Structure formats: C-alpha cells, structure tokens
Length: 172
Image (cartoon, rainbow, N blue to C red; front, side):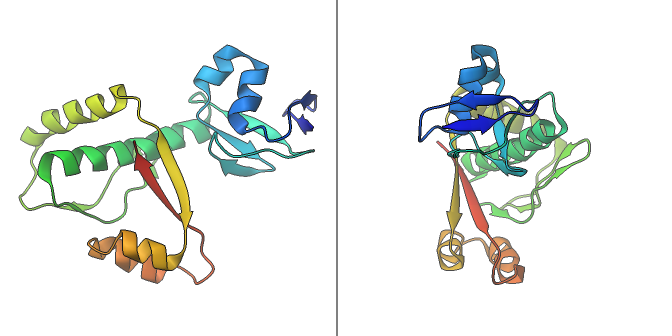
C-alpha cells in the first residue's frame, strides 16, 4: 500500500503498517525520535494503523505538537508518581499548557515544595523504566467504571457531550 508523506512523496508499506512502521521505513533516527503521528490531519499514537492513500506525518519533540504531547505525557507520569508516593490521590484536570503542564489533585495530606524532589525522583524512575503508554478509547460506561473512585474525573465525564470520544491512558 502507498501512503503520502508531508513533502508529497509516496512511501510503499506492507498492508497493516502502523505509524511506527512509517517512521522506521524513513529511517532509524526518525523511528527513535517519533512520539506520535498525524494521519489525515488527525493526531494518533504510534500504534495507529495507516491505510492506502493516507497522508502521514511523524511527530517528534522538535515540533509544537511533539512538545504538547511530551507535556501531556509528563502530566500522566506525574500522576503515576503521586499515586506511587501518596496512595489515594484524586485527579481533576491535567492539561498541557504553554510553558508546561499541571494537574489538579487532592491528596490525603497537603503537598509542599519540600515534596517536589521526591515526586521528581519517582517521575525519573518511571521514565527510566521505559514502560509503554497505552491509549484506549472507552465507552462512557467503561470510563465511569474505571474512574468510579475518582469523583473529579466522574464530574468531567458527566460534562462531556454524549457523542464525545473518551480516552484513557495507562503507563506500563
């Protein structure tokens, strides 16, 4: 099958190829630097399949999309670190923003700047473990079940339009 690259050239790939396969077919450096893809103007992760005639661009950290993706992923890493360190943590919103990211959280105790070193160290351990991020599209009912013990997340889910695509992310 053929896909179209950003420069207008075609790349022939085996049927069933993914965005990661596209990056690898271009070169090992790009395969290593690839964070995600844009298929037909829609952002997707590296495991997304590509089809005949798709327009495919590879997203790396050098692009605005890549920087936003890294910030979003870092928010998830921080969430995992907070759970590891403090147990029962409730999560609200955690977006990437210009200049970084944040996550609204509620823990069993107040966090202070004295906690930052431990949180950052745990985040570094999580990143070093090189566990894969898994993105899943879930139904509203599945999301409500997954986040049954997360009242802020349940509130966010309830505010979504009925036809919203709901995704979850796990690390490892």
